[in-house]
Length: 267
Image 1 (cartoon, helix red, strand yellow):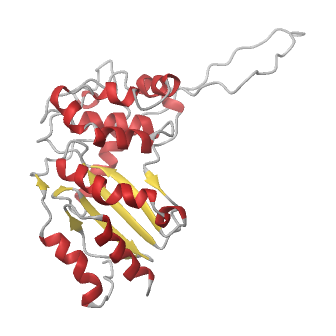
Image 2 (tube, rainbow, N blue to C red):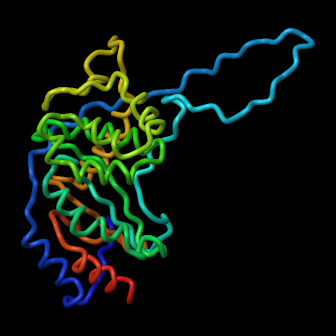
């Protein structure tokens, strides 16, 4: 069982007051579908005849989608005394408000740059949002090529537009150079949009030709959220020097969050 921090009421009061007026984007959490996994295919090897000169490579070859590392969806140093984990749905209006009013200022502040706070994103798409799962796929594909922060901002900044027709690709593409977008787009092969309440394409049948490896990362985040349990988005868990505080949910402003962080750091 995690030990809760013992804080003076005056220091914790600001955060609790904010929680009391938070507008929740709540929904019943569906049963967790079985996560899938992908493995990189073995590299093909060719033999060279004796005496054949070996050419030196002129550059580092681009990695295939299967060879890319797991997505990095975080800001700052993991050694920071404060860790803030946020479970969000990119189509959730309250998640956008939290990002605009508190998380973006946090990301741009010296709390991240100076190693005071480690901010971690977790995907928790809700079935009530038609394109939430698909948005999470684009986000994870972007994170695997180092474009997490760019796409996170693009999805929230253009939420009203892409949630109207599901054209998430348009805003991902416009946020970065064409070469980077192509690497992201390659990972989305087989990741077709699925209607809310249905299983992702990769989970329908074992014999299906297409496979969305990105679902693995989304389901890992969802499984983590179910243990809390996450009952609405955004939900956040703040840990100070290894000790978890009570789970929070809803929106808040940067001045309130900053005041709370300062109260922790002053101890």
